[in-house]
Each structure stands twice: as C-alpha cells, then as structure tokens.
Length: 236
Image (cartoon, rainbow, N blue to C red):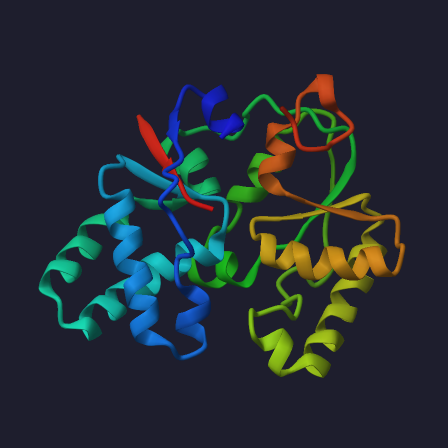
C-alpha cells in the first residue's frame, strides 16, 4: 500500500476479504472454494483494479475462478467472474504494465537475489517485471540466482504430502541462494519466502528473506530493510 500510495494510487483494503480459496481448490474441496470465489467477487466488484502481492493468489483467481464458476452452474457467478478477473493484477503487473513505471523511488543498499515463484513464472509469466523493478532500486546489488527457475519445494500441501521430495528441492534452492552471496532473497510470493526463510533461519545462514514489496517500499531513511513505514482494492 505504501508503494502504491507513493505513486498516487488510492488504495482501499476491504475488511470483508478472506482467503481466495486456493488451498481448498488444490485439496479437492471444490464447493468450498467456489463459496470463497463468490465472496471474493462480491467484495472486490466495486474496485477499479484489484492488486495482490501474491502471484499464486492472482493465478488462482484468473486461472481457476472461471472453472469454479462454470462448475457451480450459477450464471450470475459465471458473469461476475468473467467481469472481474481481467481487473485482478499481481503487484509487478500493476506497477509495470498499468502504471508504466519501474522506478518507484526505492533505496536498498544490500546484495539481493530474486527467486521467481512457480505461479509467477509459469502461470502469470511475469518475466522480467520483478527484475526490472529491482534493477531500478538505488543502492541495490542485484545478483543472479543459479537455477532460478527451479521450484523451492513448497507447493502448498505438496510440502506436507511429499515432505522428503520437498526438502530435497529446498536443499538445492538454499545451496543456490548461498552460492549467490546474497544478503537477501526476495520473491513475489510469501509462501515461497516462508519455505525458504524458515530453512535459512534454522540453518542460521545469515541470509534473510523479504517480499519484493518490502524492498520497493524501502527508502533512504530506513535503509536497513525492515518493513517501512485510479483506485485499487488490495488483496492479501
């Protein structure tokens, strides 16, 4: 919200919003996911644009809500989903494509590497948008992540149901992050950052994770990198 307001966007955060339903959908609870999709549509229908700092949530809304609506057989929901989904954007899509900017006035004098989440990379095809935003941050030392396109092993319930495979994938990702020499690993999905950050913390690796939005919100007065102090509805 701080980044968007800095750019002159009026941001509203509807208190009635809940989960987008991805967890339910991925676990096979279609009717429950459809109810959450209906709530999402009703909550954000008045918004000019809906932005989420989560590629996986946006992928759920744009990629799977139409199917959920069709399965419900509710023509009203089908029409509402079709009307809303084109207005649902991931944060870097909004900044680069709609607002036409990569320089958001950020300052972050640290060595950073970027992990592209699977949903952002493969479903939303964010491409260079996150990297272009990072390249425009003053003071940053952006370093390449070896094997960047490889999954971190989270995958929602995959990490629970296939723990051994998930840990093996995570181990490879951690080695790549440490090999990069970065102080900070960033991504567009908090789920990936939770998976990676938890392992880095347990290993006391000296590397922290930060969401891309946190880096973009950083200014010179809080350069240490902690959480800094049209219209869009904001979804978490």
